[in-house]
Length: 149
Image (cartoon, rainbow, N blue to C red; front, side):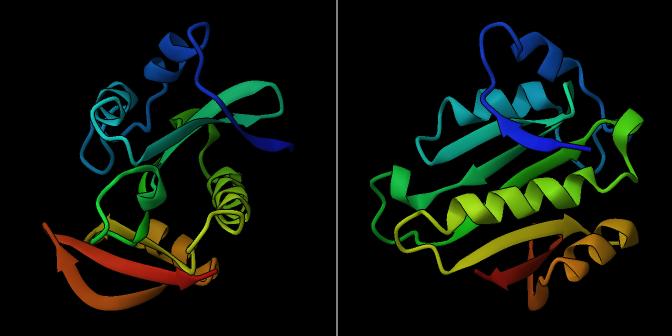
């Protein structure tokens, strides 16, 4: 399966907003909320995840090089969601791998940070398999992980 990160466009935004992780918003915010937040944060970089030719998910990166806050330097995977119809097929892992390739072209990118809800063992296994490690930090009830690029 070919997995790509694609720009969210005027033509695709409604379809991206209809994607649903199947968790009733408990683990990941709806894509419409993420896109709205991105429009108020200059550091947000977001893409739809396409599997073959179908929209399958969404991710959003906090890229400090896009903003003007000199104190913030962490590149952070802000959101990752895979639609319930596409879960457990390796799509999330491939999307993160593509994000890491993108980050390697960003100035100053040395690590990728992320966090996840406590008790989500499936996502914890995914992130560990991709080389993330726990930092020992908890942020708003979520466990923080980091991976060197």
